[in-house]
Image 1: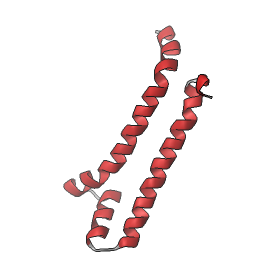
Image 2: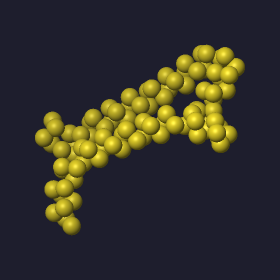
Image 3: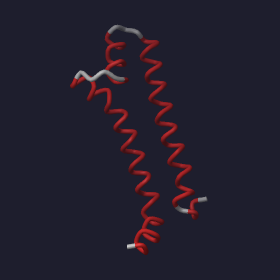
Image 4: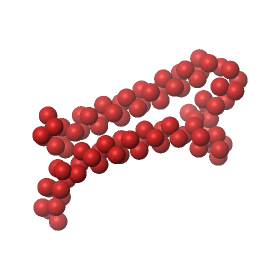
Length: 89
């Protein structure tokens, strides 16, 4: 088991991290739909309410916040690539 963890994670780790990052980005994008459907307060419902009220500065602020979160997730994934697999450096 230790051999599988040590040698297997080196080969699978980068792909796994890529998939996890893409899933996190899609979950963030899906918050708009999920919060609107289930009436859960959050960033998604805020952007829907602001768009319906034509409050465009709030829409721009929420979209900017979501973009910053996506960029930080991608930056973190890129930095972790070198930690998981030294060949990437």
